[in-house]
Image (cartoon, rainbow, N blue to C red; front, side):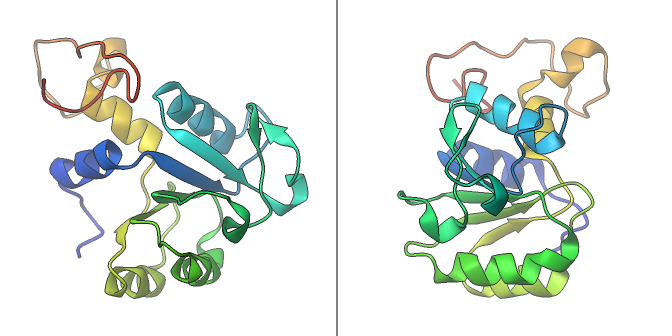
Amino acid sequence: MNHDAYDDGYIAGILDAVKTIAVVGASANDVRPSYFVMKYLIGKGYEVFPVNPGHAGKEILGRMTYASLADIPVAIDMVDVFRASAAIPAIVEDVLKLEPMPTVIWMQLTVRHDEAAARAEAAGIKVVMNRCPKIEYARLAGEIGWTGVNSGVLSSKRPVMRQGFQSFGIRAK
């Protein structure tokens, strides 16, 4: 797959399908990107599981923090990675050991590892690199356009408020 550019349908399909997200490299510091991305995703109705061995057993945003992906007691749909690119091969290896395996590995802005991505894709896992699910969700839902930012999505309609999971949603009515 070409990881230099993603089709909006590919990103929207991922954000629409996943329900549980493990955030590897989660931080309890409210000025860190992982903290506010987790807060946003929780607000959209995703079930978020912070992963940080130094904070394991404590809560971040009211969610128990786990030392590793293997410690999470439920199946994970997506692994959102807030770690340096050099850490990606080991994280992919951890993901490949999970049963069932997550369907998506998402690497945050500036994080990219093509070889590890190819290994995950060979196992049937979708991969997104150098993107933020918070930014992509807001862009596709039209929320970014509310503040005057050019999101690349043209519409004269505001997103429809929905109840429950993914309140603004990127799904058709």
